[in-house]
Length: 85
Image 1 (cartoon, helix red, strand yellow):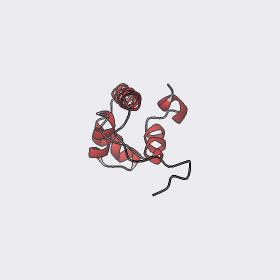
Image 2 (cartoon, rainbow, N blue to C red):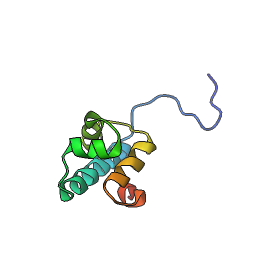
Image 3 (cartoon, rainbow, N blue to C red):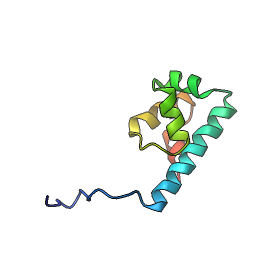
Image 4 (cartoon, rainbow, N blue to C red):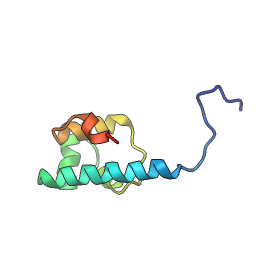
C-alpha cells in the first residue's frame, strides 16, 4: 500500500504520545474530583460510558476528539484548557 504523504504505517505509539495521554487522563481525573463527580456521573453528563471515562483517565484509550469535547463541557471547562500541553 503506497503512502499518500498523510498516512503512516501502523506502529506502536511513541513515548511522547503516551506521556501526553497520561497527562490528559490525570487532568480529567483531577477536575472530575474537584467537581465532586464519580466516573459514572461524569460519563452520564458527557454521554459516554463509565468504562470509557475510566480508560481515558488511565491513559489506555485513544478516544475520538468528540469525547474530549463532551468531557470538557461536562466539566464546565474549555476544551483548550483540557488538552493544553
